[in-house]
Length: 57
Image (tube, rainbow, N blue to C red; front, side, top):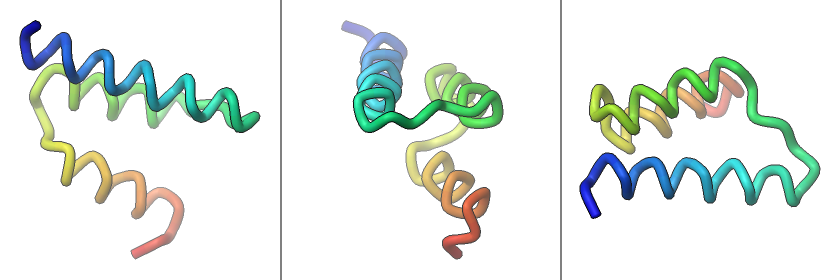
């Protein structure tokens, strides 16, 4: 499995986990997740963006 495929699986699993909790993935989150899958941002950057979006930093 390539790193891109692994990243895609992690993103799918995270979205599924959110849906099980009754949450919906926003369009912004989807777009940022695609950047991560494509290797344009690291996981640390992805987390930093999500935390900033929700005012956690």
